Length: 171
Image 1 (cartoon, one colour):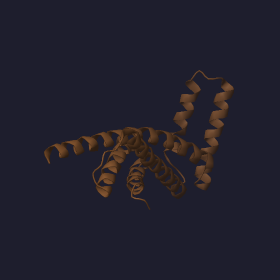
Image 2: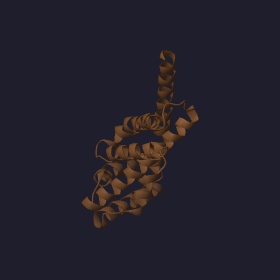
Image 3: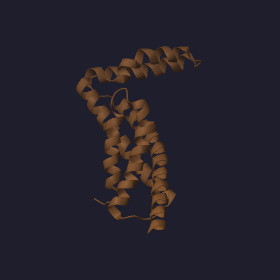
Image 4: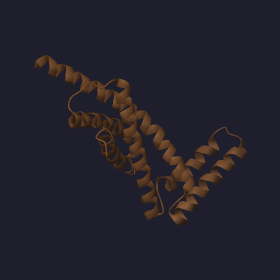
């Protein structure tokens, strides 16, 4: 495997593990994924020697790290759901239905949405798996982790570039 991909894979895996911890998901996207992308930049510098990284390239590496994090988080979420036949979605469904009922959407739309949500929850409880749920979670994770990966990739590249300039001034 290329050394340019492996730091993203390793850091994405670690972020995916943290991202799949119940109750930790709300802060994982905002802090863990950017930190993983930042660390990925650092590890890449350590593997390939100090070099200047343009910010767009740092952003792309951040996206790659974020997408790996999303992939592993989705896989772990699916595995946990399969083993336990439950997850946060199933436990929070009654609250989601109340919120949907209170919103100003047409009644037909609310009925359809709650029907789909209930079917996903029923599939998870019965089979431990819902394809619709996994696809939705995967797409949501991919979007969120990619965006926060960009942030971490750019910050990591900028930080490493500053350190590189400081070290050149000293030597």
